[in-house]
Length: 483
Image 1 (cartoon, helix red, strand yellow):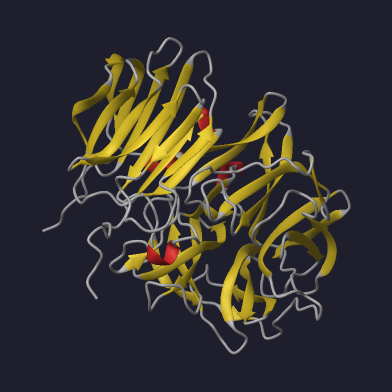
Image 2 (cartoon, rainbow, N blue to C red; image 1 turned 90 degrees about the vertical axis):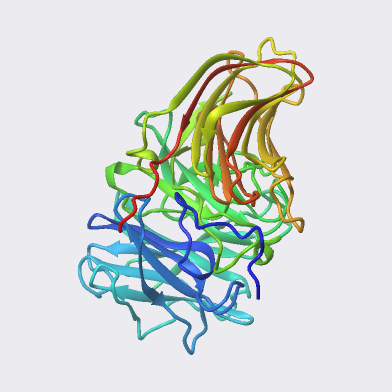
């Protein structure tokens, strides 16, 4: 089988498996200076199949060391998604400080929750002989993706497990990771779901950088996302160790990302410095099995730091790229106070498959209907990231960098100017574009498959002239060569 002509080079600032299929991130946990990343993996094929947990570690969230497959299918089924914790108090009896993975064993029509543990920093794994640890006789077929965390309450602590169950999230509690009691459920009546929920997440985030913190419940929605296909919803509210209550009425829908390719988001447990860091599978179930590929298919989004910001009387999720991503990159090229005539304006000397662009546009007096940047320009094609002034929308147009089957090529999100300015940061890699606007309140994540070696950058304005207040362009140093 010949590789697809648009099969991308390996990403430089995004994680991908060494070969084969990749989807959901699993078991994100930090221990002894290492970020662990497990992931749904079919090592022998470019399409979804018997699921394993692949495994990699990193000290900086950029350079990843591939480790042997952690968990493989067995007589109880495939190894579906789940999470990992550091059992510092030895509640499960596997040893103080053991890494414990909690995952779904999947067989057709039956899903149960099981454990595995490691006492050597995740280098080897043993499945618990008492598996499964949660297998209710009346559980529905969709009963999966355990997210486990430690909750420290006034009367002591306990483990909490979130499960995706049909169109709800169920909460269980346990003293030891082995005995589980159902405590509550959430989701009934909260909007209409056109597909089952998957991969729940629960994090406690700071508000406006101060001491106040609020809980955020996150769920993956298989169908009905903002750009078609799968997507990620979130709810801001309160959690008492057993049940979650949303601040919003049931008809309010909040999307973590308005792009087509952000799913199954999961945060690292025990991240240093009290930060909450997460990433997601950068694909969409609507077409994931068909994207151009040669030896690998599927990658993760860039790691992001999370917070909450007050905005118009409500709290909004904020996502910002981690500073580790561009540590050591050379100083940026800078442009200031440029008039963009109607049409396109090439930025001479600015090229790259891997770029970070930080742009500020003055839209207060612009004549243009829309304006923005085009990246990965070449051969008459490119990817547009723009702002529609009339609709007050941020948009990404990958129609000239797509393989022509499936997927929404134009993705959009509501975005109002602040003080007449629109600020947009764009991370470009070999097969993706991630857009962060309004200081991370609005995000668009998208795969793209540009023409090979296309690397130009242009400014554009449609319907009249526009003004670029400032643009900074950064690129990593070329990879070192050894010979």
